[in-house]
Length: 115
Image 1 (cartoon, rainbow, N blue to C red):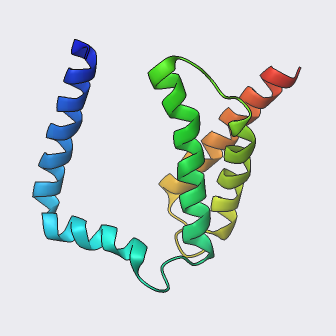
Image 2: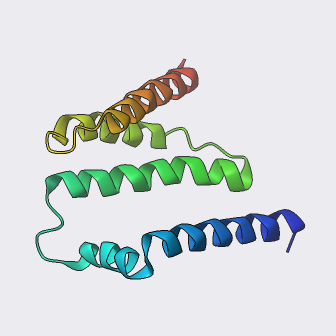
């Protein structure tokens, strides 16, 4: 195991534990339990989950292996637009801005790889 991996893991673990402690482990646990409650997986939460998975699939190979799977930006382009569209209940400015930014990022990557 490289020193970078160990330090990154310890940083991740330390920050996560600190935040979870401050918020409360019971609150965090109850938050995660929502995934398994009936009625949670409505249209918005499904789109949000697919969007997060797609964004992670774009980011992680770049971080870990310095590889870009540009075709995944087709999915992130669609899910970012969908998140803004279906977010009538959660129309938070940070969420709208982040997904607008991601639409631009995906557009640049797609065009760069097609042309």
